Structures are given as C-alpha cells and as structure tokens.
Image (cartoon, rainbow, N blue to C red; front, side, top):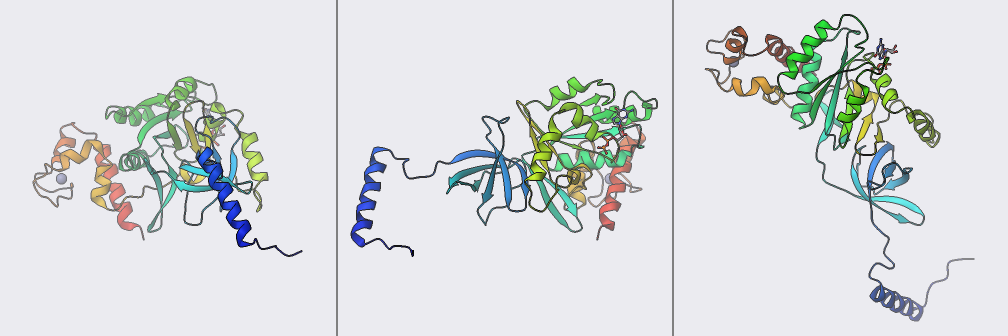
Length: 323
Ligand code: GDP
Ligand code: ZN
C-alpha cells in the first residue's frame, strides 16, 4: 500500500496537538540532546560514552555529514528513529596531530598529558624524547617522562636522559611493567587527565597499558566484532575511560612525528632554549658557530644541557629534509 497523504485538515490538527503538547512540556517532540565523549571511530561510525557515567557501555552513533569527530572529542548527540546521531562538536582544548608527509593529521582531541616512555631496550634516542617533548609543548599538552623496564640493568644512561629533562620541570617516573614497580604512581599521574602513551616500539607501552587496564582486551574484542570490514582494532585509536580521566591508545599515536610549521615553531617546543634564543646577537642566528650565540654560550658554560641543543639541530635538519 502506498503512503497516504495527510489532508490539510489532518495536518492542521496534528500541528495544533503538537503546539498544545509543547506548551505543556517545552521539550516534548524534540529529541533530547545528550553530551558524549568519542571513544572510537570506525569510518562514519562512532562510539560515545556519557561523561557523567564514563564506565557505562559506549553507545554507537552515526554523525552529521559535516562533522569530523576524533577520539577524545566532546560531542552532542540525540536519538533519531532509534539511531544515535552526533550533531555537534564542542571546541577542542588541545589537538594531538601527527605529521604525514606535508600534512598534519588530527589523531586525538582534548589530550592533557603525553606519557613519553623510554627503556634501556631498545636503546633510547635523546633526540626522539626531545621531539616528543617539543610536540607536547607546541600542542600545549603536559609531558610525563616514564622510564620503563627498571628491573633491567643498564638504566644509568637512561636516568641521565630523564633527569636532565626533569630539571626543566617535566615529571619523571621509574616503572616496570614486569614487576609492577611504580605502576600505582603512574596510575595516580593519569587521574583526572586524558593521557596518551608514546615512544619507540618495544619500550613496553602495551605492557604498561595491560598492567594499568587488565580488562581492556575484552572491550577491544567486542569492538572489532562490530566493525563490518573486520578487525580494525590495531590501527584505530581507542579511549579507555578511568573513574576519573582516560587513556587514549593507538599504534598511530605511539610513534608519531611532531606536526610543527617551521623552525621557529620547533624552537617553541624547547622550553630551555626558546627564551635564550631571543638573546642571540643576530636575529637569524643559526645557533652553531655564530658570534654572540646565547645558546652555544649557555651550553659551553653548563647552563643548558648540550644534548638539548644537539636535539634541536637534529630535528631542524629532520624538518628541512621532510618532503
Ligand atoms: P610496545 O611496543 O612499546 O607496546 O612494547 P611491548 O609492551 O610490546 O613490550 C616489548 C617487550 O618488552 C616485550 O617482550 C615485553 O615483555 C617487554 N617488557 C615490557 N615491559 C617490561 C618491563 O618492565 N621489564 C622487562 N624486563 N621487559 C618488559
Ligand atoms: Zn644563537
């Protein structure tokens, strides 16, 4: 049977009824808007949680065509014909972006803390630590330095890398996913913040996350089942809510490259160098052999860690060489 068209009279009657219902209850007939936080995105499908009840199961939603939510986004959503639809995005506090060729890709929103994990194995690269510190500074995200595998011998060099950066004001934790050392302290640092773990492959990020969230794999499993194209769980960002705070995990985030526009942007990522750089004699100082370079002078007199200046130069070259 085809759709029956309403007569004008019927339409008028329905409208009058709606108006009466609205007068009695201003929210009647209007889908209730709810707040949500995006915990996963698979193509055009999202999962959102209730920020007031973060540990309740997530709700699957679609989204309006003009929106590009990412994990960590705060959204408004409503139910339409039994289907959750995200209709609005809240302004983002911070944006974590990775560099992909010439482009910067947004990977997570509203990240408060970047946990930079290093370990005795694989051998740490101070310049990589400084690159991640710079990324955090540029995006206004607080870094947290985590030395994992403290059960292994040979952590002395590592401590030097960590402690030199700790003196710049960055918190430093020594942990072991294997023995559980420092894991409670790490958990305490994650409270009431949204954190991301990053660092070289093999430093033990997954092990630490498993230690912190022993129940997580079940949730990841249920998500991949719901994905029509199969198992996407290893490439998709995932937001793990805590009682207060959250951790965002994704292989794409774990080994990302800083997205910064140019050299002066890069300098903004070095808290210990950026103010000194303004005191160099020449405005276009290359901070190498130039006369009157405040950075070279500070490094020579032990007022800054020469390794930090070296990291800056390495990263500068790295950006020059990018396509
Ligand atoms: P990811 O690539 O950073 O996620 O690193 P994984 O969590 O996969 O760990 C890499 C390897 O390091 C695995 O063989 C782990 O068992 C090992 N590992 C992780 N944490 C520790 C630790 O605290 N101590 C020791 N000795 N080994 C660890
Ligand atoms: Zn200089």
